[in-house]
Image 1 (cartoon, rainbow, N blue to C red):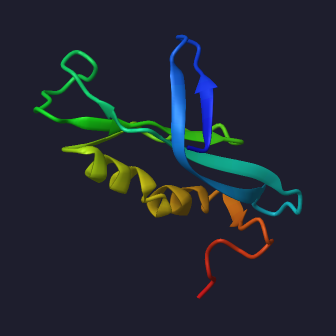
Image 2 (image 1 turned 60 degrees about the horizontal axis):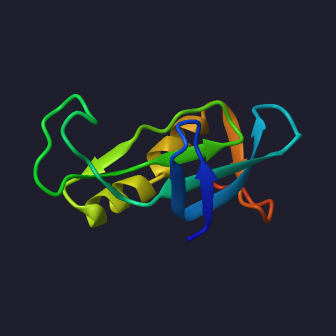
Amino acid sequence: MYAARLEGNNQLTKFVAERKLLYSDKGSDKRKELIIRIGLPYQVESGMVDFPVGNGFVGCHVEVDGLEEEYSEVYGCDAIQALNIASDLEPFLERLQKKYDLFWFSGEPYFDDD
């Protein structure tokens, strides 16, 4: 487990994975830290979401720290599927790439410019 955070509703969110990157606004050289964390899978019950849930339905919280960007709550038929969907960060990061330049902590560009 990487981290735990007490949320405003006094619930403890535990994270199983995180990715640390750097970003800058397009055209800027000033780089800032971006951390994306994936929460522990949790059982989804009726009333928690506005759609029908089956037995064993699981969700994962994904937190974006460092940018005013939201990552949707992720759901799957079981914990493995929910974690798999949550850990597929590429589509989200590709959308961010339209507004920001992204870098690994080493300074290398996150995306190749092929």
